[in-house]
Amino acid sequence: MRDATTARAGLPLPGRPALYGARGWAGVAAAAGLIVFIAPLLNLAVPAGAALHLSDYSVSLLGKIMCFAILALAMDLIWGYTGILSLGHGAFFALGGYAFGMYLMRQIGLDGVYKSPLPDFMVFLDWKAYPWYWSFTDHFWYALLLVVLVPGVLAFVFGYFAFRSRIKGVYFSIITQAMTFAFMLLFFRNDTGFGGNNGFTDFKRILDIPIQTPQMRMTLFVITGVVLIATLLLARFIVTSKFGRVLTAIRDAESRVMFSGYDPLWYKLAIWTLSAVLAGIAGALYVPQVGIINPGEMSPAMSIEIAIWVAVGGRGSLVGAILGAFLVNGAKSWFTVAFPEYWLFFLGAIFIAVTLYLPRGVVGAFAQWKARSTSAKAAGSEPAQKAAA
Image 1 (cartoon, rainbow, N blue to C red):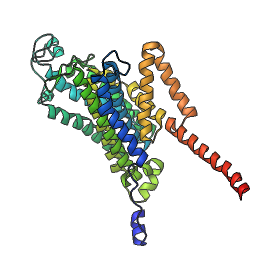
Image 2: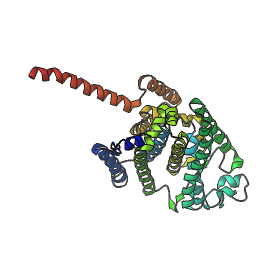
Image 3: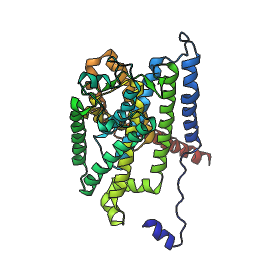
Image 4: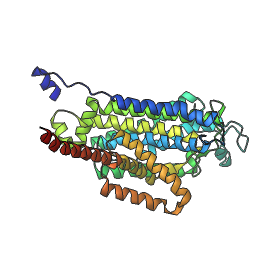
């Protein structure tokens, strides 16, 4: 509406802002170089006893956290920029992991405990054949298609009915959490064909290449890093576009967006579905690096943790979402080893502290500090300029 009015008035339309400035692109290039060149060099070429050697454990840990960073970006698009708090992204993450996990289970072949073409859990439960929904899952590209379609179709159908009914706020958060909990209970059942409580594990190969080799672990690490950077650029492209400005307007004043002639349903549905697909891709990258996927990834606590990552880093800041995922999960990896029984208390304390003292997250607090510092310098320079005059 505003663009049309501006055009009729003969005024120039505002140009699209640059995706990143020089410093932003330098940061992206540095991150890409670190992931694609430096990390493989330190892990594969530097001897294990050397000070600069990047251990296999560190590669696995960083690869897992980068998957969580992709998931945090997906959450930030829907919560930080559209104002829709989802407590169901753990389900989309796990569904993407299960979709790719089916392919990984088929890749085990006859190397299982029972030496059967069926997965060990199916043999144990006396299954005689794969269920119909396992068809074609031995094909790599079909598995990748499932990674996108399963969470995407579920999100589209769920979101269409939810947004058309104008469910929002805490009510939307509750029903997304209920959806996640229902999926968790479903996948816990042995008769669903997804391994029940144990899920999928004991993976052997991808594309007939052993997973446990250092080269394959590093390949997965690099692919995850590249996907993270691509997700960041895609998210940045979206939020700086006209589509992104409408999403922000929906977040701030949905009723005014409707009065301006826009239908929020399709905007919210589009970003909701894209966010679910990104969560599914993160889950597919997570499974071969961690070596397991089970219904625990669908627990309500997992979805709440995702929101905490974004809140800690800074809601409505793409870099903040990545930073929050690294900070919280880095702290979790240390706490669960040093003080495993206190981790959940520490996580709750983090959330309370951020809510009370850092409502805009770490990135927002840094931006406020920088703005105050700049203002103080400008105020201090004014008397000096007057004295010199």
